Image (cartoon, rainbow, N blue to C red; front, side, top):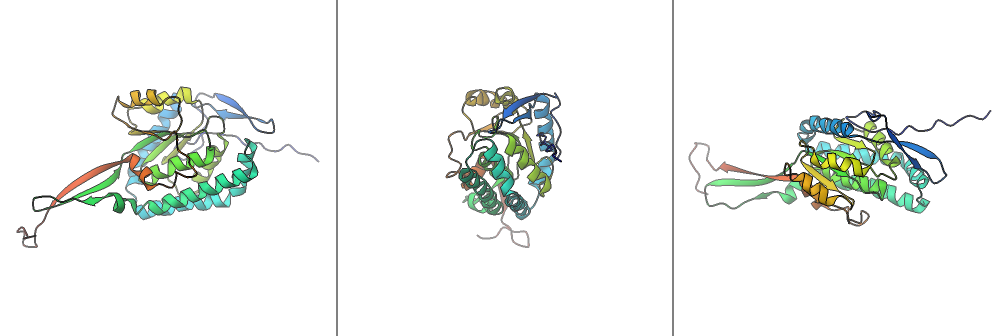
Length: 290
C-alpha cells in the first residue's frame, strides 16, 4: 500500500525549544521540485522572546571554561558530520547542485572545528601585558560583549549561518539569528543539531522571517549589545538604530565565506577589552624592586 510521507514542520528555535511564531503567521517558500513549504514568519514578539532567552543564557555561557566551550563547538561539528547527507539533500532541494551542496556542508563542518580550536587560544593572541611606569602589572584581556543579533547571509544559507554564529559563541556571547529568507530550511535543521548537541538553551536562537520586518527590532532592542549584518539593504538603518544605546555594528555583507571565514579576528568583533591594574608586592607586603 502507498503511504503519505510525513512532511517536516519548520519552526523557530528559542531558548532550546521549537515554538511556532506567536503570531501564527507563515510565508511560503517553493522548493526546486515545486513543493511549497510554510515557513514561520517571526514577529517582534518572537525577537523579544529570543533576546530574553539569550540574555538569560549569557551568564552561564560566558562563565564556562574556554576549553568546555571548545568541546561543545566540536560536538556541533560531530553532529553536522553525522547528518551530512541530510544537509546535502536540503541544499539540493533549494537549488544547489550536489557537488556545491557537499562543498558547503563540508565547509560548514570545518568552520565549526576551526572556531572550536580558537575558544581557548584567542585570549592569548589578543590579550596583552602592558608596560607601565608604576609598580604594577597591567593586563588587557578580551571579554564577551553580551547578546548579539545576527542577520545571516542569504547565500550560502548554511555556511553563511554557521560562519556568522561560530565566532560569536566561541567568544562567550549569546546570539539571536535571522536565517536566510529565501532558503531558511537548513537553518531550522541546524537548530535541530544544536538542540541535540551540548549547546545550552538560549545560547543560539534562530528565527525565520522577513528581513524588512525584523531588522528594525534586531537593531533597536535596548538589551542587545552588538549587531552583525551580513546583507546589504538595511545597513544604514541598523547603524542609526544602534546609536540609541551605542551598539557595536559589524558589516559582514561582502565576505566570501569560503575563503574569509577562517579568521580569528572575527572573534574581536564581539569582544570588549578589559584592563586590570595589579600592584607588585612581595610576601611581606612591601613593594618589590622590579
